[in-house]
Image (cartoon, rainbow over all chains, first blue to last red; front, top):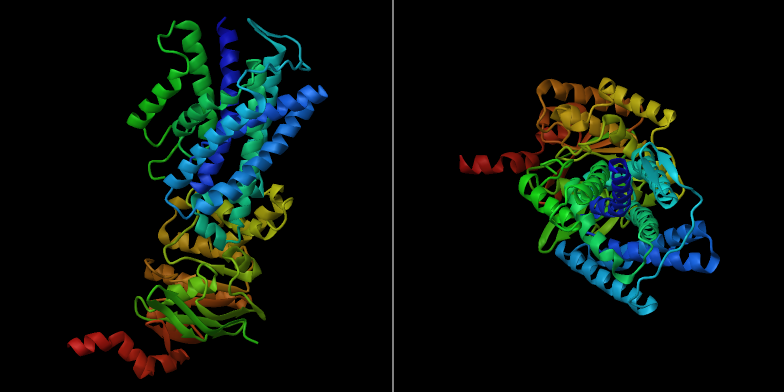
Length: 287
Length: 251
C-alpha cells in the first residue's frame, strides 16, 4: 500500500509541477502573480476533452489543447498584462483574478455547470512495480509528466530562450542592453507555460475522470502555495515543492488518518513557509 | 563619416533639461572620454544613445544610419555594447553564461533560433576567448556574484564584447576599483582599441581620462562646454571653472 500511495503522490506532484511551472516562468520575468493561469489549465482540459470526443484521438486532444492554450497565454500577455505593466503590481494581479473568474464562468456558460467524464483509453496497461500496481492511466500521466518536465529542464537550462529568460529574470534592463528581445522572451514564456498547463489540465481530467468549469479553483490556490514554497521564480524549487506537496498530501491523507482535509495541507504549508522561511525552500533571501 | 554622431540631441525629464543640444562625433578607432561634474548629464547622454531613453529632440546616427527611437536591444545588436555605472553582471549566472547571454542575443532574431542550444562548443569557445581577453578565463564556471567589483567590471566588458560591438560604451569603468585594477583596465581598453573597437567612456578618474583618451568632451548642466585633446581640455578655462569654480568662489 505504501508504494501505491507513493506512486499516487508522485503522479499528483508531477501534475502540480506542470501547472505551477507557467506561474514560475511568468513571475520570473514580469513579477506578476499570474492567477489566471489556472483558467488556462481548465480551458486546456476542455479543449482536450472536446477534441477527444470529436476525434477519439487522445494525442490530438493533447496537441489541440497545447496549441490553443499556448495562444491563449500569449493573448493574455498581449492584451491584459502588457498594457498594465507600468502600473503598480497590484493592478495586473487584480486583472488576473478578474480574468480567472471571467474564464471560469465563460466555461460554465459554454459547457454547463456539470462535470463531464474523460473516458480516454491510454496506450498503457497495468504496470506492476514490486508492491505497487499502477493503473495504465497513471502510467500515462507519469510518462507525459516526465517528458514535459524533461523538456522544461532542457528549454530553461540549455536553450538560448532559457538563458535569455534567466537573464531577464535577474535584470531585465541589462538583458535588453545585451540585445535580448524581452517582449519576445516573455511571449515565449506564456506560450510554453500555458501549453504545459493545458496538458496538465487534460491529465488531471483523466486522473479524476472529470472535467468541470471550476476545476481551476483549487489548483489556482495550490500553485500559489507551490511557487511560494519553491521560492518565487525558481524553476527547480517549483518542481521540488510540487512533488513534496503531492507526496505529503497523499501520504498524510492515506495513512495517518490526518484530521485536516487533503486540500488544506497546501495552505498550512503556505502559512508555515511564509512565517518561517518567506524566501521559500530554494529562494534567496536577497531576491 | 563618424561612427557615432549626435545632432542637436536633447533629453528632458519634465522641467529638467538633462541633455541639451549635444553634438557628439566619435570617429572609428578613437577612444573618446566624456567628463563633467556630477549631474552633468553624462549618464543620461549614454542612456539616450543606447535607447534606454527616447531623445526629446535631435538625432543619433551610428555607422551611417539613424538609431534614435530604436529599442535598446536593437541598438545593441547593431553593434553598440555597453557597461553600467553600477556594475550589473547577471549575479546568479556563471561568467560563461553571462557572456553567452549577450553572444546568443545576436541569434535571437528568429522565433526558431531561440530554441537553439545556448551552450554549443563553438559558443563556449568564443565565451572562453572573451573571458581570456579580460583575464577571467579560469573563473568561467564561477557565479558572477563571487567576483570582486573590479573583476565584475571586466566581466561586464567581456559580456559587452560578446555583441561584437563596433562601439564599446563604458560608464565609469574605474569607479570603485583599486589603482592597480585601474591600470589593468586601461591596458585592456587600449588593447581593445588596437583590435579595432571604438571606445566611448564616461570617467571621473582624471588621470585615466587624460592618459587614455584621444579626445575629450566636457559636459556641464547637460551642455557641451568644451571638446578637444587632453592637453586642450586641461588648459580650458571653462573646464577649470566647471570643476573648480565652486571651491574657488568659496575660498
